[in-house]
Image 1 (cartoon, rainbow, N blue to C red):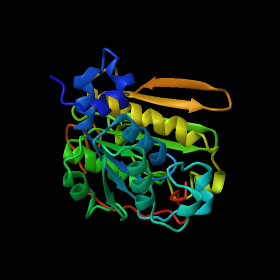
Image 2 (image 1 turned 90 degrees about the vertical axis):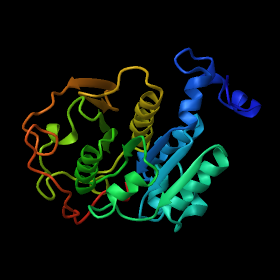
Image 3 (image 1 turned 180 degrees about the vertical axis):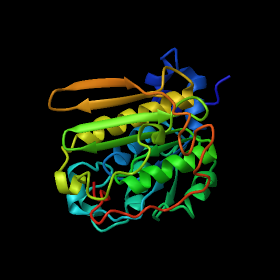
Length: 272
């Protein structure tokens, strides 16, 4: 017997008629909890589609405020939000979109000292890495491996994007593919190199898709694969990636056993 209200039956009707979702699947989404770290180019569309889909609990993590230069791609924020904390702006947008969703905000920078507590705060089912700098990405990966939480990594720059999903004990983590951070200034930031505004939408909504599939238990996740997208050529490429048994964090004999904070780049992607 469905516990959905008449209003929910109507709101989510296009989900419910999908045989892979149905009423029971929609209830899974309403009971689901997803943490979005970074409320910018990637996190903005991801959070909005999760909210529209009826994911009942969404956590938003960001320490930045809305800047005018964000509005070219960070669609969860509007012009009147300039100067407002991104997590507050995001929470207000989601509240206006779907009253079924509870938003928890964390107006802080993720660090080795707080990230595991944030993940545990609501016992999130799935984590979305919407950050835009390498120190945060390595920190999120390591924390999710330690906490045994699935997450989807993504990155965008210029006209390119990529993403992969980690599932505990079932495939490679981010460090299996990228063992260590690149040298400082070796990779330009979006602030330095630019990014086509829609890239966040393309890749961020794919991240939301992975989260929804995980909560529903359907389809094939990008577990063991790196998906890349080239907007100029309009091509996707899916590359199989193996788990590295010598990985420093998820390998058979890990050498990284506690979280550390890496140096933030001088000009990072936080305004991405």
